Amino acid sequence: MKVVQLAQQLRPLVGHSRPTTICHHLKPRALANNNHDSITQFDLSLTLKRKAAEISPDLKGTCLFLVEALRYYYFDSDSVVEEALGGKDAVRSFIKTDLKGFRDSETEVLKQLSSMGRLVVCAGNGAVQCAANLALMRHGISIWIDVPLDMVAKQIVLENFQLPAAETINGSYSEVLTQLTAIYEDSRNGYATADTTIALQNIASRLGYDTLDAVTTEDMVLETLKEVERLMRAKKLMEEAARPF
Image 1 (spheres, rainbow, N blue to C red):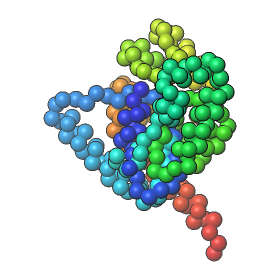
Image 2: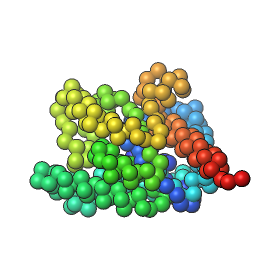
Image 3: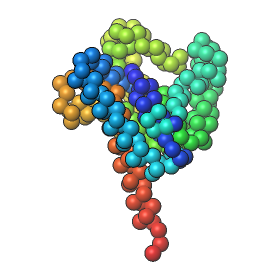
Image 4: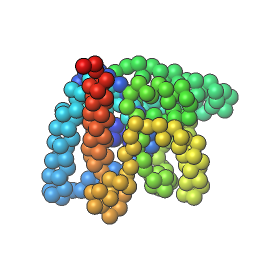
């Protein structure tokens, strides 16, 4: 459930342009202690920094609704809403008495964040359930981090992962999985509007890993950077094609 770690590794890119939104959760593999793995992680870190430096000029500060390597600033929209409303307990009370008011608060936070540059915003499920929110995210690059729900459910149950106050998920593994599935079904149309999808299963397969747990945060970051680079190149080609002769 460490999309936060992914987002924090992607943050203060040079310039200013559109936001990137990252939705969903992921668990990075714990770093090994032997020298070989340490060297591998060091090399991967350098690769990430080089890739970030390559794409920075084209991004021109465009926000990533999802960042030190890219020199972007990271925000978790759920946390911003919680702080604005007075904490987790206040949020839970607000949701019970005025759900529409809470959703309006989510929209206002996204509106403020989307008006800024050089941000990576990790958006909650509520952000993709509203047409107004989806429209705001069009000011940036939206990325869906697709992680199997059973993996997320295990983390919630086994690791006592602290969810945003707006998400009331608890119980046994099967109960948590059922609740997550319901939330996913409510949000899937919003996820489908993302500019691109980073799927944990696809990365594990491409890198030849035996398990999804083997995929590291760095693997996910590098894949995300490549996708952002691809999107910016496509945008540049479209802009050049639209220029008059």
